[in-house]
Length: 367
Image (cartoon, rainbow, N blue to C red; front, side, top):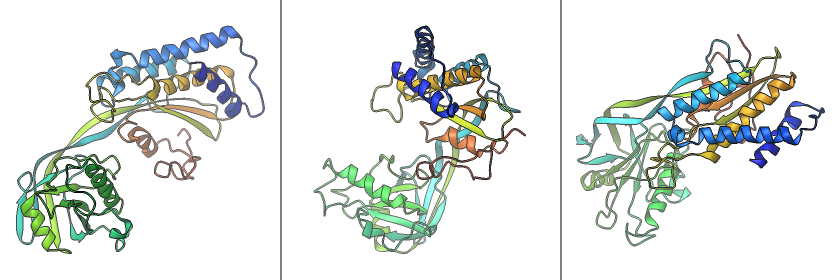
């Protein structure tokens, strides 16, 4: 907590004052500030917040708490907005049925193949492109990530040139690496086949954290594997009926409107892992309190907002946003940038956040 206190003071000095200095803060004020931040962290990380997972009751409780703190600090909601700004996101898909058409025959999901990436729909078509085991960059030399909308990459999970069998502890990390490489080529889909089903049988699941999340990944059984292996560069089509598992998340935003043409934005995500179903290093189902991820950062932002509002500093407008669904893939911050009523001027380092910067001609201003 002492470190947060020091950081908050340094931020105020370096970011807001532009050559001015804060008056010396008394020990009493330092203690009050420390106590307030500790109170925020304790409240947000309390078991009653249920881990603050996006789309849950725990997130709603945290959202109301943060909105109340912004209001108590004297900040206003954005024009035409509440303090909380909802956005929709998908927790993946539920699949009712699926099929693959190949070589004038149709193969059904679950009987002949399995879906491995639950975050996408599996309606696609293209031509198969065989890359062997897909472990080397040279396997993809004929493909270009900018022009692969018709390519369906086929990986042979028979890694016998590298390991003895699928029971080797190196197998899954190697396979995950190969699949990740393939997804970043930006194909229509990635299909796993096996030329040696005894030693390298079909898999039912795989960790896709390293892979692009929007690429379909399929693992085929023995019958369909044989068919695909015999016919490279052949037309393949996948169809599925599905429903999205839609949920609602919330960003919490408040600002100090000084009537200036520029706005400085401060953000911290407030969501966490809930009961640890996904993204947790633990296999236990228990409340993941998230004091340092990111209740502490949210507490710091709340107090920076309060202190700045009380200071009377008005060189810019100041916007504070507590983002939701960061743990789901930065979904809250992306949703906020995609909102059209309050566009952001992008001053981030383009090498750090290339996918989430708005265009330079989009300045955040009230309508």
